[in-house]
Image 1 (cartoon, rainbow, N blue to C red):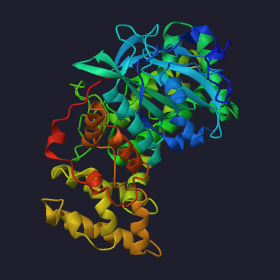
Image 2 (image 1 turned 180 degrees about the vertical axis):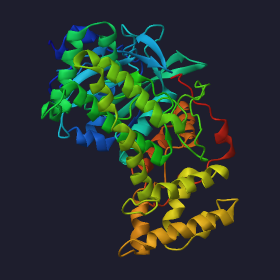
Image 3 (image 1 turned 30 degrees about the vertical axis):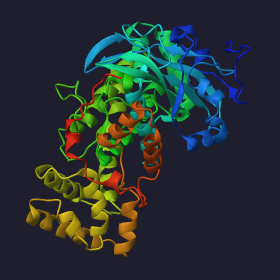
Length: 494
């Protein structure tokens, strides 16, 4: 594989491996980024820079700005756009691919091998009718949410930086262009497997599956059983944990197409996402999702449906269909167990007992009936563990019903060996965030950025990096959403 190196290439001292590109040209098209005119910094993530072994001071340098805007090649990189297919809103869409994302390659870092990708870097072979660009609005949302999810402990792709440009981009209105530098161990999706399976390219399908097993799931070759069925089971387990994380923080992905599902169980492709305000299990965050396919309460079943599609794609590598069905079966118990465990921790429960799931469900029903704010409810419950229940009680219209539930909860807490109010409250504060990336917070940062003021992007990033902490000057970020937040519409357009 020939690296992209020329007289202007910038050498960061990284060792590039580019293992995905070594799979062969059936998997990608060589594609160089389209230069971004008049780039400027919108936001950088120094913590991730350090993890990657970059000098934080250099990250603000003009050289870095040019490199991460797609204007200057990185010595050793091998930029490609990858091909995949997928189901979109439950319908087979056929060939898709990286329509505006360009994989620069894979580098060895102190955090392990990481792939770098420029999202919004211009036209590729797979852009179809698109322009290959991303807009400032959606790029800021992805940059902030990638890092917010990481700080919450949720498996996710990361974002090193976002750059902007005055270049006009037409969506519903005329917006401006931006590029996000995304980082992950791999950007391989369910759709990569679907592509080769659907096209009868079984040799390529096997090569891809072997690559994923050898790199990320080597235990799938150990012991008995078909290694590809074992891969499906391992991916299902990671996906179950990821979706349990989502549900436990009120996160709605918004567009869980199979091409937006990571083979590593990472949250990927931040489009019309939302952290819920008032709790509604049927909440739809994506304005384009008129049928509610990706509503909050449907996410666990949609994840299983997507895993079933992955299983179908892998069938040519298995001995019989039953192997795929058996590999998927554990998801049905792994997900509810993971969710009960996480929700129990939010309530201060140190173990899972019979009746806990019902206790959790009873609270969720009360929250739904009174449209209680998801994040604020659980944060206030931290103090209620010590008996200070009034701030929580005030969130409910049905206060007697809440009192009855709170009595059951307190009894359950006190049944735990060595129960201590303050210790429990402290443990709850470590899993119930004070600050999440609500739509209105992102919208304020976006509107200021569109006027050339990126200070709110930086302020919000710093707050989201410490979501569980009580810090001065951030009360507005932890407050109830304003009335106008209900009018924000987020769609697939980005």
